[in-house]
Length: 171
Image (cartoon, rainbow, N blue to C red):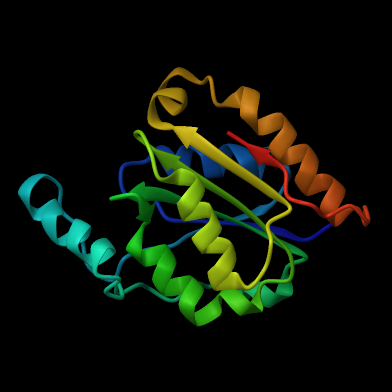
């Protein structure tokens, strides 16, 4: 059986909900990426947006899992200001190249998801075997489950030794 990790960052709980479900269905280990300081919402959210726009590194807690120990790592992050969340960017800049095989997903309110996924791939130096963009309204309604099956199928094929590791975009 393949050794898979679902590593995610979530501020509002949407990305966490998707990550937990994916980890249960694969099955996979699950690890949250955590900020070193508490992030606010409302007006204090302005600092978070500025951090994304100016690509300022986020202070994150160390992850307990070694990414290189896994056959495949599924990365999940919300889209902030049209880009991946700053904590995920920080992690990938320092440890992204340790990942053997990669699958990526993001949650978003409206747009920027596909670009965020491409940037996640670039920071890892790998093309994802599976990619998925999930809208916030799909998380709330449960409609994202329709996207999960092909995403999970592509991951299983990739770790099962399938020679066809091309990207499978599910939007």
